[in-house]
Length: 435
Image 1 (tube, rainbow, N blue to C red):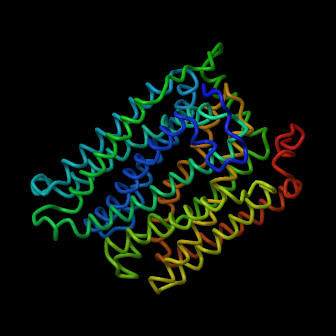
Image 2 (cartoon, rainbow, N blue to C red):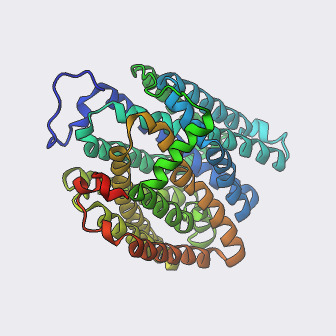
Image 3 (tube, rainbow, N blue to C red):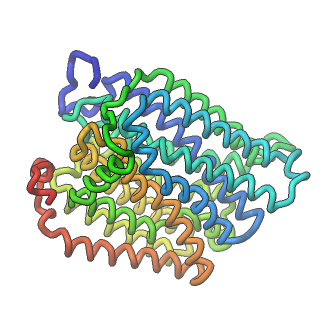
């Protein structure tokens, strides 16, 4: 627990930021997310420019999802068992190395000597390595975040943590899109992809420095049984906690069907015809809606009736996706992406707070790993689904289908969880509420 003597008051909007390690955590998450979002947006555009293949976009998500899902439970077990700061230093060093390899592989002086298939193998391989890192990153940071502030200010900390992620998600894609589009005009001979990766590497180094500033986080879980029994304990906890299970399932299936991120390069190049800069703005619009909503939630919490508000938020998310698919006007598309991000942020805040409050300290790594399997990788698996659906149905029908499936999922969840709708946050924490 934090060593600060004076506990910040619950009503203080800046309560969580009074704790040194939480400030380092938020700064680290901001820089890492900024870099990762830049890298993601330019890689998608770069690969689609090279191949003009929707399936090639689908394989970006699949390359990252396979290891992220496949070893997520093991990553959670390791996070519970080992010191977290040291784990993060190793994780960030690995991600830096993979970004550096992609930086070299996409330089103009190197691309000329590589066949396009060889280049794609390098890029997909490094994305796969990032997926391996993600399997350990989520559980490790989940534990650091949980232990850097007192439980009574978890809602405030969740809002700040999510807000930092969303602000970085605004600036990252926007910056990446504009650097990709304009770097060659500012410095002739410099490719946009090379310039973008240069900034990505700088931000990764800043993230590493901020990890160094964290105190050590020793394990609170000493395994006394076989690893498989320990992993099963984490799964059983989630599946027997009905609120946590339904929250994860709702997010998994809504993002799996309703995500449109993988198809944004197709909209930018072929439908709206706005180029790399427009792609950056579209990625920014969703994150801007999320960030502004999260800032508003610092003062106006959605936790008075969390389950009701969660269902309303996912319903709005699905409607926004359908609107985006039907739009052929750039600024109207931006509006729907803005609304999608706004509704999604409400879901993120509610789900994040519920996870923190309902998870015991000795199981945080394993529960976070299950969460990563349900939610963290649903984006990448959803990207694969979007690419395949776009290939089979067409881009616009695939998006409308995804939004419609999200509405169906909300309706089914509402029917299954009616008893949770009137509950307050305090009532949800009572043992009888989760059965």
